[in-house]
Image 1 (cartoon, rainbow, N blue to C red):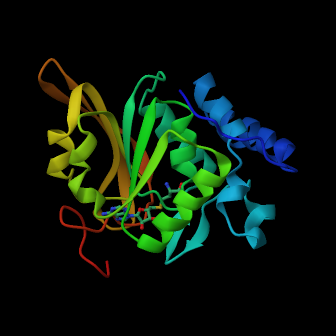
Image 2 (cartoon, rainbow, N blue to C red):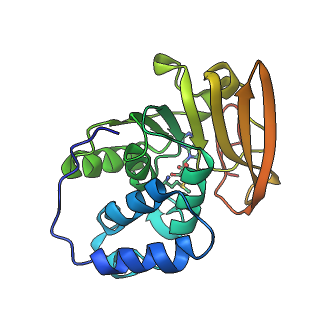
Length: 225
Ligand code: SAM
């Protein structure tokens, strides 16, 4: 972990602490590094000011362009499932507000995060820069293609749901690497899957049901899904 995130004027420290204890730890998340990152990253700063008061509520929130910032528990669940120790190179698909990338940046060495909606990518980049998350790079583009420029990745995490695992992710996964992605044959109903590359084999685990916005792109759902 290496970033220079700046302390900000933060009236929500207690709300964040409550979020971690009541919504996340109580539901079974045990990784103390994940719990600490969720306690540290100012979720409200990734939302418009009219949503600051609801930023630590137990649910997703709108971020514009029909997209959402995921529920805090879901962010913590995926961060625990991807099993980071601090040395990893991470690829995130679906930067959205940039919040998930900020949390990942506290858990890994560096994070590349792709967003298909250019306006969201620009806004996420601006907030992350403003807050000093210097080990995150936001890229605007189709994340179903992965991001070959910095492959291989130790961890690939998709925050939008696909019908099948996009092939480029396997090509860009390092030995021992993990992919966590919601997979389902309907656009807003998925099972979270973890793929682990071990000894040349791909192990697949189902981690439970979730509802994500669709992953749209060449290896995902079509435009307008
Ligand atoms: N991680 C985000 C956050 O913390 O705000 C939440 C992500 S939101 C649930 C899913 C995001 O995936 C949306 O912003 C959507 O535009 C994006 N997305 C969908 N298909 C994509 C693709 N092919 N490449 C990159 N981003 C994509």
